[in-house]
Length: 110
Image 1 (cartoon, helix red, strand yellow):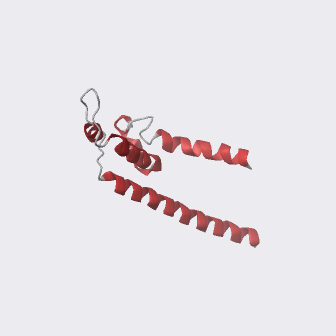
Image 2: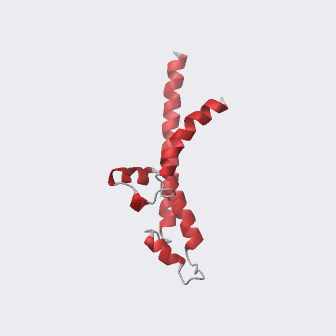
Image 3: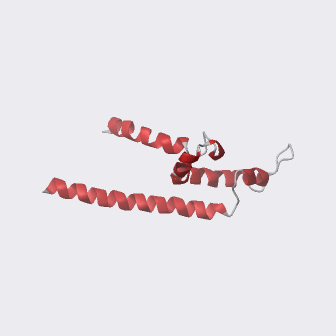
């Protein structure tokens, strides 16, 4: 049921989105929530987007995009690492879903 799936997934996505650095910058997060920032796949995607947008650009007020990225703790070398981490998270999630479905299927069949 689409309505039930939406009601289930939206609250599960809110926490990773909130802690991804988009709404709350990493520097503003309490120390005890820093682990959630690193587990959020959204922060890796956002970092790639920021690097793609700001790297090598100069703005009219004299600010270089690379300076902004440096303030955020990002560099162009982070793109491959972040992309690899997102792929690894996806593979891990797919493996967990596969084994979870196998286990559930076995209990239904018995």
